[in-house]
Image (cartoon, rainbow, N blue to C red; front, side, top):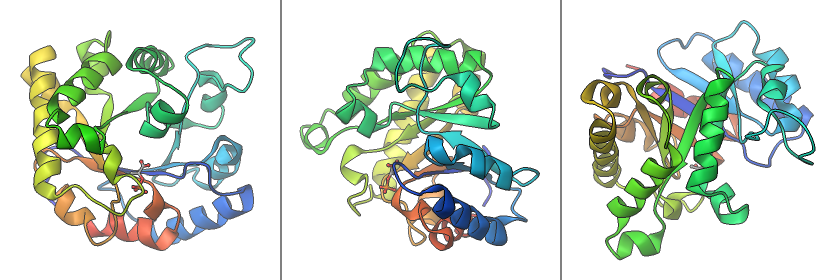
Length: 255
Ligand code: PEP
């Protein structure tokens, strides 16, 4: 597939997979994807499986991501995980502000922005999630909601850090529901985000930023979505839990 930006496809395993299950999944992925270089491939296991997965993907083209990170460096923050702790396992990417964290853990745009700064300060790369709910889409406020989230969640990043940040557009109504945004709906919002980045930063920065689509991406819809000019990858939930479907998604987007 001829893309302006290198595709980045990440699997968000959420709260799934024991260490043994994670190990099997990665073994399957490596069998299928060993030779793939054209796409940045990332797996984001739960924290408890990072050590295992990190060992398995050493010297391969799979990269490791975390699903969240504390904005603090260390100290009395029970239950939290710091950048330094992630770096011990060669984590490269950190998902921030996933809609489940916004909904169930009350994460705000302000907090996501602070975390994004901390992720960059540790030389890691954030994947910042934004997306409208069904009510917001139906009431015609999608662009307003996305603009507020993009401005708020990325506040304070300079142009260089912005260029090295991944945005994941994930319509909340399409996550885990089997409903995918149509390619037209997705491309429209991606193009809107890129225009917004050009107005906040500049054309060049906007051109460099990779914007993933997320929301029921499957082997049968990935290629069409990825062929849109402003869709530069995918954040995959359910279909990343099986080696076959995640590998098929990636393979379907080659050439
Ligand atoms: C997600 O949670 O990031 C996601 C896109 O999930 P799913 O692919 O299952 O819709």
